[in-house]
Length: 99
Picture 1 (spheres, rainbow, N blue to C red):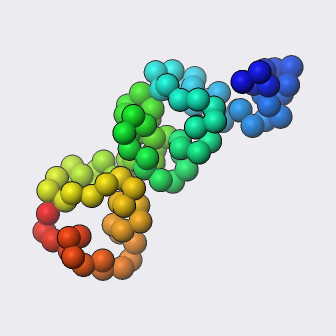
Picture 2 (cartoon, rainbow, N blue to C red):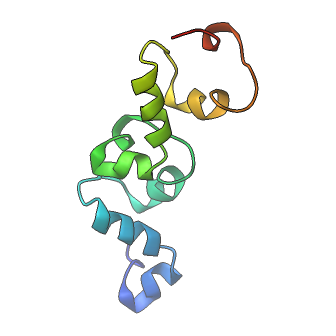
Picture 3 (cartoon, one colour):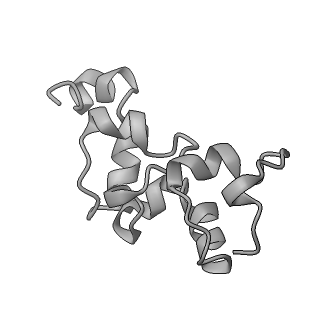
């Protein structure tokens, strides 16, 4: 945005993390607005953010991706993963399987 400049102190410091991310992952096409909501928020947002270009959602999807490699038959969304899997509670049903 127009305040993400040196003259405006990178929007009073609000854009520093965004700018560093863009330097590290220049191929990730994300706006500064979505960045603060999606990248590195502790939630694997999946889709276009769960890519090498976006650093696996700023690292949020690494655990999810490793789980999927280990249990490829477990059909769980990236959103439900962080809520259900490994939360200390046996959720039963479709999550209590060998897959």
